Image 1 (cartoon, rainbow, N blue to C red):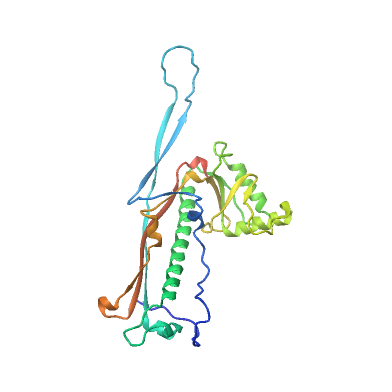
Image 2 (cartoon, rainbow, N blue to C red):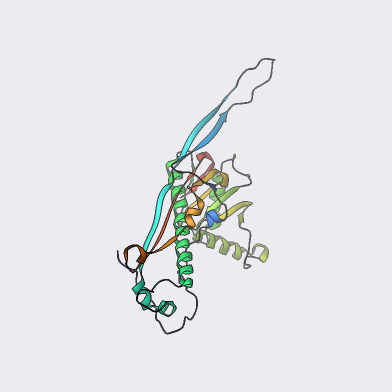
Length: 289
């Protein structure tokens, strides 16, 4: 396995903390914008209940059934995933980590601050992967479900974002419209366009402030960093599901010094987790694409 390249100039003392590349955060789970199911080892059936003509005229004293309840299932099957990387201590010696390693050929390893950095950085990588997986799954399942309402999309800009959000609003089924957890999910580019458009309109003269509640005509807008450009999705948050075996698996990273096991100068970092996402009632979902 190829060792990672250590980039940077060593000039003596550490000039500051390690700074990782910016990564998309896992906002969808962190903000509770979908419903998370745990303890799903293999798969979970999402039972969808529908009904038809349950109410009838009461004209006599008899018990007479009317209409029916229908139970159907949608299946969500978490995918098993892993993160495995290997670092060479000799490469770390080339960087300014050398000043924080004990003397001696056999005493090379991570310093405490580098360990903290690598755990935070790789944890963010897992969060980004899960965020992307959520919206890749939800777009794919919505596209494949004939009961999902479609809204024809275009290339989103700050000029047309309000008009295009209007298409999503108009496509929302009557049964879902007005529900407390009804949400329009947008990617990072669309969110920027929306804030820019509202700022240009001068809404309450507050759009240059740091914390502005995001809504569109009373409908919550949720930032979904994993949602690709020029796509939006509307649904009740309680209708969208993510499934995993154990949430803490996603932040369980293990650092193994291989010197005690095989005599090598390698350090391995490993994580194993699972995840998948799906919707329950397709008729309550709008896919803008």
